[in-house]
Amino acid sequence: MRIATSQYSQTMNTALQTANAGLTKVMSQMASGSRILKPSDDTIATVRLARLSREEAALSQYRSNITALTTRLQNNETTLTSMQEDLMMVRDLMVWAADGSSTPEDVKAMATSLESLRDSLFYSANTRNAEGQYMFSGTASGAPTLTLTAGVYGFGTGVDNQTQQVAVGDGVTVAANVALSDYPLDTFLNDLQAAITAFSSGTYTSATASGQIDAADGLLNFLSSQIAQQGGRQNVINTLDDNHAAVSLSNKEATLALGKVDYAEAAIQLNSYELAVQATQKAYARVSNLSLFDVL
Image (cartoon, rainbow, N blue to C red; front, side, top):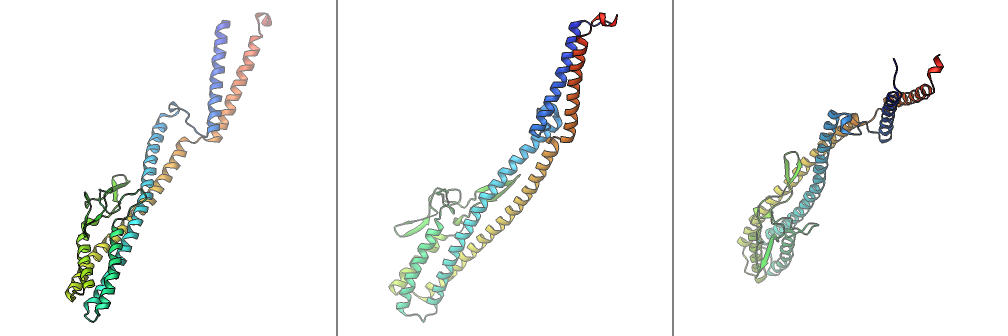
């Protein structure tokens, strides 16, 4: 059978191009460490890798949210604990005043201490975070939690008892703030101011102090429950973060298994393509030098 020179050249060129393409692909795989250079190399693995990439991106965002949320919850807990300590001091002073054995001078001295504690509670309630947002104003984080107008305490405009939810998992959210408007803190401070005025003027009675003791107990119980919630939320998100880390590690291992090149197999393929290229080139050169006179 005779083969035309043009047909033979085309066949040999095609063989060379195929072998060179395979050689280039294997070398690129070995250089990049990736088995899949384009989706058509393995369509099923490409789809799985895309899914793993999306899941890993979501996990990364959840873990970033958890890191920021942990800081917020710790700041909440620290401030609430400070308020709790101030309240304990207020309660101690009220107990001291309620026993009836204190002199007028002692009571006036208590008033001075109570003024400092009142101001500390007010400023703690209006604590801001690093972004300048009020921590305890509910969803109205741009408004002060408490205001003081003409000597009267009240909650700021728009302050509510709603929580700011942060996504920390697929369908899982955790409250990032404490709404102090859940407790009539403004009323407590107004009553405390009235007690301070009575202490300063000498018009106080043991009933005044007893009423403030009960009010302090109520606020202490509220703050204690909020502090406990902050701790509980931190335990939840720490557990979630550990779970996310485990899933992320599993995803990375699956990604490597699907996309990482097998260097041993690639080396064998590389050697095969090199031999194919060399054999094709030698055959082409040998046959190109043949003529009909060589076989006559």
